[in-house]
Structure formats: C-alpha cells, structure tokens
Length: 141
Image (cartoon, rainbow, N blue to C red; front, side, top):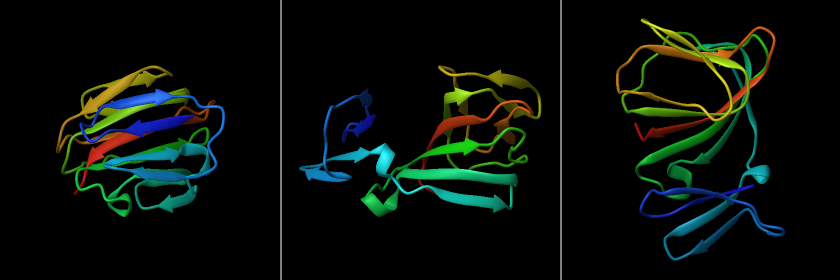
C-alpha cells in the first residue's frame, strides 16, 4: 500500500504492483512505501505498554505542517489521558479499540475516523481482547 501526499494536503490510498524505493522526490510530491517505513517501539510516558509507531510524515521529510503516523497497540495496551496543541484525526485501520474523551467512550473499528480538536483531553488504545491500529494525523507542534 502506498499513501500519496500531495502539496494540496489531499490524501489518496493507492496500490501499485512494484516500486523499488522508499521515497521518490518528484517536484513537491513525495511517495512513501509504508511497508518500508521503520517501525519504532515505544513504551512508558502516556503508554500503558509497548506500541509500534511508523512515522510516515514529519519534519524529517520536509513537512512544515503535518505529522502522520501508523500506531499499533497490542491487545489491552492504550495511552492515558492527554492533549495535543493541534487538531488530531485518528483513522482506524484494523482491530478493535476505544477512543475516549472525558465525556464519552466509543468502540473503534476499521473504517471509522475520529476528529479530536486542539486541547481536548482524550485517550485511545486496544480493547482487552484485540490489537488495534490507527493512522494519526496531526499538525506540527
């Protein structure tokens, strides 16, 4: 699977049969092969266990505006209440999770997306019986 990020910030998910590189720079558009993005393990801080993070778009590929990452939680692992200083969109890829604010909890399944405004206290993670993966899209900062 490839995610194409255009300068206009439109997101398209496309499949290609063969690409032999991780990043191709053609003008302002960059192509990133998700399967070849390094997976970083992270625990502690706001996480209740080990999660896997693939940072797809950030300042390292010259984005001044976006952070996009795939975050994968093993069953039972979540993060604790936290806030961001930018809006966040969580787009569920697989598994079964929970996205919660101080006022509501929603079961998250593939195909769902959650918009969390700047400053809203929230948490998200896997249910006790299922792993959970989502794409996190946030502004820089």
